[in-house]
Length: 372
Picture 1 (cartoon, helix red, strand yellow):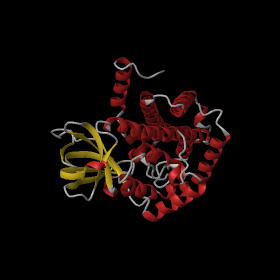
Picture 2 (picture 1 turned 180 degrees about the vertical axis):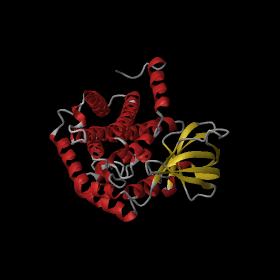
Picture 3 (picture 1 turned 90 degrees about the vertical axis):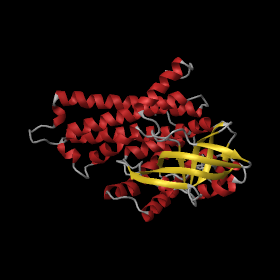
Picture 4 (picture 1 turned 60 degrees about the horizontal axis):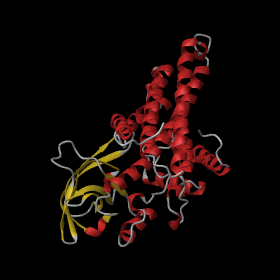
């Protein structure tokens, strides 16, 4: 539960609230795409609020905040429907955390400084004849294949790419997007306002030192990063649950043409009460998992459960909010409309709900992992 939070965490929530109310909500209410100047303004305000550096390591002046702190701040931002805005958090090391030279100087330092942008290449197109693979030729890996859903890929300087290395197994390889043989097949926009890209790799020659970690560790490294992203999605979703519950509550308490507020009707109260129950359960799940992460427990299955439950819950709440608010909630610019449009993508991002649910069952039945 979000109860009994330490004073330092409560102070971070206050800072996030002030950042949202003073800077981010006015930007969100403009309803336009965030351009480069606006993104820089968001970053400057977030730095001043002590939020930007939470995701960055202490070695570069960051705060290297724990899961509970990040969860509380992300939920607070979601509560104001601003967690989706870019530039709030500084780029973290991601998969490059702990790499040595030359990757440390060539890619990690520029990433943390904001001079380079990274993307994550994991998903393969269904039509691919095999997973992206590489063969070794001396000190070089020759990569072939495709990645179909690289979030933010069109703006990336390099892609941390999951590749099956012949004779070694899965590995994460740093591939520069301007390397010979790398081509962006297409860029496409999503309902939530983000963009993605599909890439092809044709005999891309990559130095062997671009492998992150030991050969064969690609899937393990990927799971660690994906777990962090899933928790971020879950925290934003839970914040949006609170945002929707409060919006609906205000609507139900307002005067109605019938002469009494809609909230006076028993049937409406029944539906609204159910929204509050679902939001309470999702929030409780989120904070329990954040504390488990900070305890050092193995949490792969718990994070999957949290991500599925939070995103499915906010989807149900957004749909119910439209029903209770009526047709006006679907008009462009209405507060519910924006959330309703954006949250649908969350049930697919970083693992579709059905896929993750099957993985949770596999973890329990085949691997004896996970807890209730």
